[in-house]
Length: 294
Image (cartoon, rainbow, N blue to C red; front, top):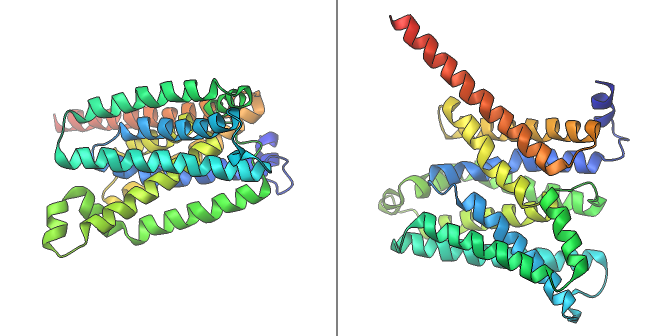
């Protein structure tokens, strides 16, 4: 308990990593609820890996000796984010286009994209040993080295994302649940869809740069699944999923810090514990209800 109290003090050495993880835990599930709503859970699997492939592509350019990544470490990180956004945004638009036209099996397309992105990530970093080291850190979800400036920039961006998701919740819900009804009501469905895709791309790309694809995937999918049985509307669904993600991040960080374990896998494991508890509680309530009805 003393270690947990020490973590919450302002002078805690890893306070940026702690608060950054918790912010990611709060915000990513707000995006993930739309994946469940639109029955696109597999997007949460493929897009973080596509984002990682974009980062690996930036390392490829560095390995080839191109001057695009020369300069300060911050400059290199910004270019890696740009590559991640480019890959993620292009993939989202491509998947959305095929989804709208109904071409092929959705799961097959997303599975193929995931396999391609994973293979591309490995091939890209093979050109640069330093890139391989960086990608290994991403896969483990190591956020401990986040700088003060990156931390505050992350807070600003994710704060805007969370505000937009709640401010435009009705429009995003309408175009996600019934696009034809949105058009009938005179809403600019395409504009709202593009804005939602932009938010998804930003969340995934910046999340992967911060905590890695494994943690982002976990935050996008697991907390919303844990919250879904207890939601009574879109607002409660979003708030419960966000709370589950934030608490999972806090608990995972504590266990990782106390036991000297890799941060990313521990956070995902903590989120899965909440999911298991949610399912267990639902099953127990179901059994109680059936026994009371006899």
